Length: 205
Image (cartoon, rainbow, N blue to C red; front, side, top):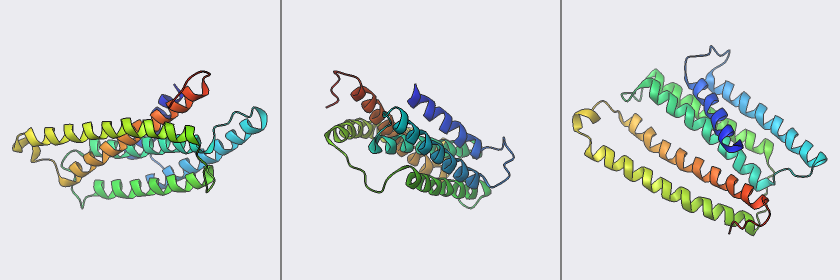
């Protein structure tokens, strides 16, 4: 439930940053950076409090995965929502494409800054971490292959008149979204692996 909740909340924020529903006081990209940095500061304090009181805070590798899950969900939802609102004919030199690129790169910068807020510079990984990463990477790799094949077959067998309205910008971002989905699967499976590993008697290898 926590994994799904993080994906949902992050995706909602990304969609709100891409749509015209809120009159933000700043550019959407700056708002996203502020939100990501604020969330990182709150999480760092929360994890430190758990470490001081309960001693069951997530380790550094798991924290990286939580951060990756939230960041990927937010950025992916922002891209998908912008494409949906702009339509398949989005042009390269258009206000929609300009806003898409500017906001996306600002959010990527926010993800990088928030990463440095949350994590140490060197992360020690043991055999458990490597086993969890290996399993998640294997499955997410298969998911990526399936998505690319489905996209290629769909585009290959779609009548030309239906493909004509789709700009190369739109198709390029569709391909990019396959990477986003694969990354989400990877992060979600890693977190599920850590959850299983925390249960007594469960082997993730």
